[in-house]
Image (cartoon, rainbow over all chains, first blue to last red):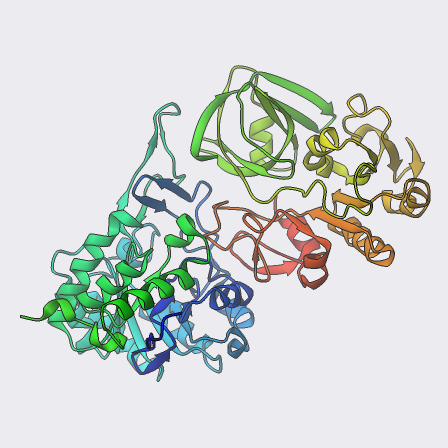
Length: 307
Length: 270
């Protein structure tokens, strides 16, 4: 590893490096979180927990294509009660663990938050932006500035942990939603969730490939959109941003930091490059920073905004 | 490897036993014994299956009738189409555990239980020297009796072969054959016993596990056993890994990710 300091801070949480396992990928068990931490992630996010267990959609739930991945997992999760058992003693993971939570409305969110009491989460991420689960996120209209304000205001009262709000890239004026979250008391913005929904059709079967027919688009196709979203949000709010979307190389991570992110989420690159992608991105970032006379991540955050 | 499902025509259906059928496709597929494919029936579901028949221009899967999906597949006839993607996962390591250097032949013991035989069938064909034991509840459920004629058989009710389970025979077999490695697939309670036997005798072993698999490409986390993704780091795991795997023989995850005792998982899955 190059002799540069990769550490960063996200909503008061110190990270050894800026790579964060994005929610929805691999966060189903503490064991998997440990594996991702060992692979080099600076922090990890669990797979979103809801109040009641959700079975998720039928298979196929994931399909790759030339520019990324389409998924309609449908928030499969065992519910907060079982989730709390799974994610006890999180100190064992070795890096900060972010709790991702979802709800059909304020009441759900508050109860899920209660279920997190006493667990060693470093922060809470409230997802208001899934494009493929009826009753949740976009399919429940949670991605508007008004709904964001209502939910975040309530959730803010329910936790003392740093609070991140995960937004959809589908809104042209994403800055407005970010501002609503900030005004409601959010400590940070996670941008972005998957785009879409999109669809892929198997032409021999004459059927959409995903059983839910539509799913969120992620990976390389999402990267320029995620960057623009983060760039816009950085201009609009003061709170830090966890930039997510299509990152699979050190250069992508640097780019996302320059757009305004304080840390970078990685998800779909696990599909294309394996779990080792976290260490790889860090290594490449370090090499780039050394070659370009950059000593700390802080120097990069928002660098693309210089006049 | 096929990343998206490719529609393939069912070319042949083989009735293997009362509740088990094989479906043959005339397509070439790069594959190593132990890997699995995802089989998609549009508008129904998509499930993982081991490849149980494989040649230069064909492959097939062997499917026991268990639930809604397998019912749907069993109703399909020659000429109908299903989607196939894969193969995925880690294969059996064919020469690992070799106790003696060449030219002494590598000899393996293969222990199959129930429809677990499907995961082992192509492996058996590739092994030059092996002793195969198959266990089943009753004679009518035994698979591939014509395909592997010198296979040793056990049934729980004594209706064919030795009365009992395959692991009862291991001690004697080892004394006779002094095999270098054991490969197994079947009920996890049986594989736990195989692991114990292999450890006691210091024999290399590998087992193929079964869990609820969704994405098959290592992103969704559904099939995790502790810190491993069975679809990527498995389904074949070696003895050293299994020794440390708390979930082995004990826990599995339901479709919503809840970790439950393996008996509950098997009861609820269908």
